[in-house]
Image 1 (cartoon, rainbow, N blue to C red):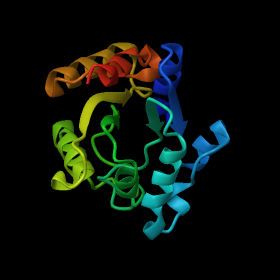
Image 2: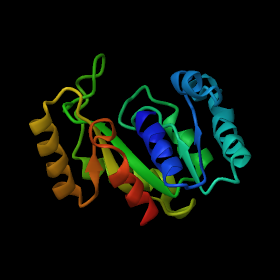
Image 3: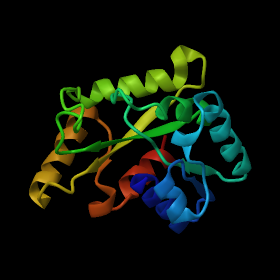
Length: 183
C-alpha cells in the first residue's frame, strides 16, 4: 500500500493523470474508497477488482494496492488481484531484512528475488492468456536496517536484478516512477 500511495503521489506531482485503488481495509481507511479484497468470495474477487479499474478508466495510470505475497501459503487475494487488474507493470515489494516468511510460516524461505519476479510475471500473464506484464522495479522496506545497510541492500538488489530498487519512504518514489514511465 505504501509503495502504491507514494507512486500515486509522485505521479500527481508530475501531472500524470492517475488514480489509486485501495484493496485492503487500511487503504480504504486512508483514501475513503476501495474494495476489501480479502472479504470478497474468491469467485467474485476478480470482477470486483475489474469493476474498480473500469470506474477509473479515465486515468492514464492506475495504482493498485497490492496484497499478500504469492509465496505465503495463506495468501488468497493476490491471484484474483492480478487476474482482475490485468496489470501492465508490477513493482515487487520486499522487506529487506527478511530471509524467511514471518511466523507462523517462518519455515518458508524467501527465494532469490529473480525467482519471485519470474513467478509474478508468469502468473500475471497466465502463460500468455493475459497481456504480457513486467516487473519494472523493486520497492524495499528497509525500516529495520540502518541507512548504510539499507543502501547496501538496494545496491545489491539493483545489481542482482538489473532493475531500479529503492525504499520509497527513505528515498522517494522517483526511481520507480521513472521505471514505470520509461517501460
